[in-house]
Length: 615
Image (cartoon, rainbow, N blue to C red; front, side, top):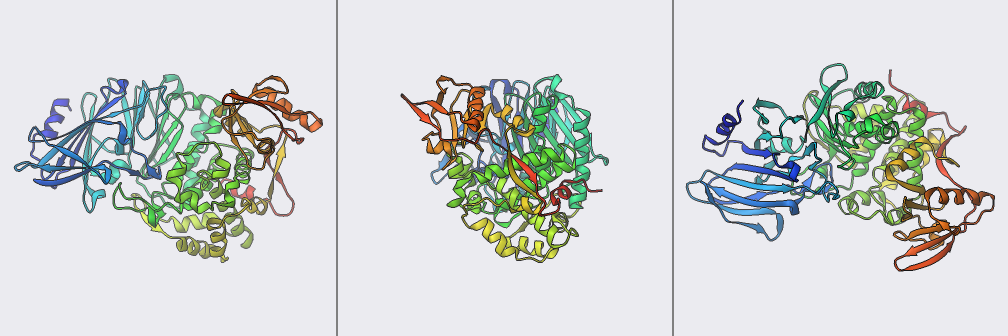
């Protein structure tokens, strides 16, 4: 459809209260780091409050880039309408609709960070050849009792030659402009859109209801290796076997491939927003690093989108959700995503165990557990998400992911042991996440609902068990699931492939299992584990290792020196801390240590059964 015709459809008819809000997003200047938005809102004369979304589902925080909204103007009947920001709520703007008007038009620009500038917020991003749009950043909506149900109609203008993918339904197509079917505000914000010059759509599964839509900064990065495609196919199959029903009509994995945007995954009802580096699909160690991204975000269609903690079901995008149960929302998702990554063949069972060993080691080092219980990492998630990496082991971070994985592994192993292998957490998932097939829905749950659901599968004192694990501080990480699974945390003097892949991405040296320290490629100390040899030697985050045993620092030299401590070698570091230099003699004699899982004989190999594909 010609652009002029679409414009007429949007503007010709007078707005009425029942009409949808018209949202027009224009990417004509995206290469200049600007996106234009125009929002036409039906409104009666009198006071009107316009809201810029604040708390965005899945990000667990107030993550919209309000500071990057510029050129904000309101008009009615072609004339400017004064607006004032609410002094008690920076995300709210108050206007008075003039007599005789039946709508207001809001226009503004979203200013994107430069390509070499790390974005403070990551919802809407762009490189020179692609863009990821999250419409929470690109609209305002009228304050209303049932704001989530407000109807919206989107039109999108993209640069010449660009194509797009989304869970939204396109119904009108012109030259570089697309009109989408009306949907609710809730659905629009739940439906990110990926567009770019180099794109590809890959059908996965066997029923035509699933696809991966890729956009890449180069044509070369779009190729999908056969084993990756097979893993994506099997992910759909194994998820069906795990859950038994689907809380969506169709599902689109959006995959942005660019070195100019950060790694990310964010869940939605019928799609997910996934971002990896440009050549990830062509690079084995990068594929290993990112293998669990799709499974994690896909599981969220059931756990987090369909079923979520009741306190996270809110009336609009301004209300603060209760995030204390992220150990279930994210923790269970992380565990099931880990399981499905192995069952789908995206990684081997050995690689899955290696990944779990890293998880266990990180949580063993999370000394902040002695004062901050797991539940509080969820309650404080919006604060911890923006915290520095330094002192993360003592402060704690978003540990509901990793510790949640260990918690749910333990629950799975308990069920398998108590029922002699007759039942598993899969049985809990099929019942707890049973859903009306073919359409998105939302259903809340409480702590007691989880307890009841687990008891229905396997009678056990789940209430006491989970209360202890979730709400009480503890000096020890919850590693019993490893032991019940037939494995224990051990150490090797060489890193496994998973650890190598992680270091290749972080560009750092992880010596947390030996010295208790992380060091960047140029020697800057990133974190120090409390009570570790590094901490006892007074090493501190932000300081810089200049020399190792009187030789100029390199990561390889540091690792060699640590390895030599096993045979009596000394470890002396020259430290630069601001304007001062000092020598630190690290008392350590254990050599290099990297976490791995070791088979025990005290329990059967339940972990093998957990990771095995369902037939």
